Length: 283
Image 1: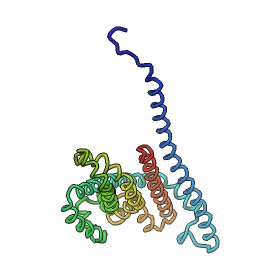
Image 2: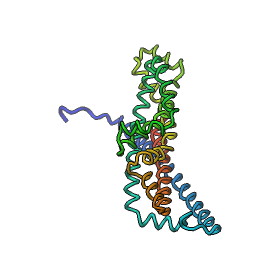
Image 3: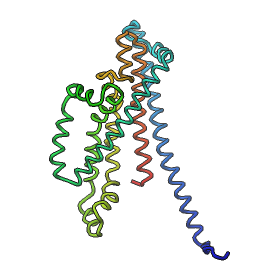
């Protein structure tokens, strides 16, 4: 074969072993993430079944009227009868939550990186962030409405505002986690700041960021509904208020059940994503 590169047949077993190892590793982290999803969803289904049984028993024992405590059967019937309405509200709340969390993570990681770059910024900006975080949200809701309006952008802004603090603190702690000996070793080897950041600080910060994301994700759906309650923007929160004002408690409890399930699934997906990323990176 003139003009072609010679084939090194001695490397073929090594290449095959490498490809096989990579394929096995990919299947491993995918299987770990899938196992987390299956196990946690199974636990939630079992827990939901127990709650429904206890709920039905309490309704039967107290002879509670429908306008006080509807039975699980009535809630399920309301869920089926208003499936399209609940699905639309669920999609709006979920979309705003995902976008708000994405904005929150970008701002939080950016601020944490700024604090690593500049200790002066850390000392000056962190007290301001703590002060903002300690202000009751109902006090600054009019300002948020003025800034973002009463549509879905209000919900996105509120979710980002209420969830970024946990992620920022976790990311900052992760960036500062590498030991001084490790940082000194990188400097001794002539590594620049950005090389040290990408090869040492970022891998160290990933588990911390996921911890903050879990904390933020567990309350993100509630933050979105809270924003909807205050601003009247469309979503599950507004649907619950409308159903309660019309004394349609079956629909209200159906929306509550959907929001609870959505929050649990959001939290579970965060855990599965963390497992997949950490297993794939070998952290």
